[in-house]
Image (tube, rainbow, N blue to C red; front, top):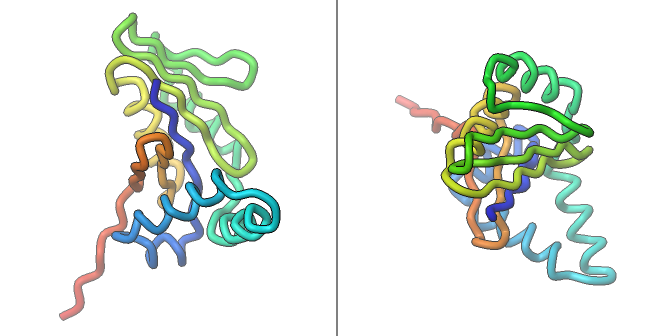
Length: 145
């Protein structure tokens, strides 16, 4: 099973940390492993660089874009994509992050990522178990002449 946490990064920090994703992984991994005062400080740092999730907007996007997909359904504020036995994903919206749990092939989670990418420009998906992360909509670097 693959588990991703998707955070909405403040635009200023998203442009600053584009290409430096290892620092973001280090911050979130440090939070998971910390305790006491260090956990409190790390949480404050995470709160500073992230924005709250507009759950209504995300729910609306999911419903509008995926309503015709026969593999999509929702139940108890959770959203599911089940493409037979080959690919399954579950999406849960929290106040400060979105969780996607997936198994099988990558089809179902990719569909969820595409919908989220259209909803906001600075979502980052983090897989702490495998220490990977990536922007759902990569920032294009500006070229100056």
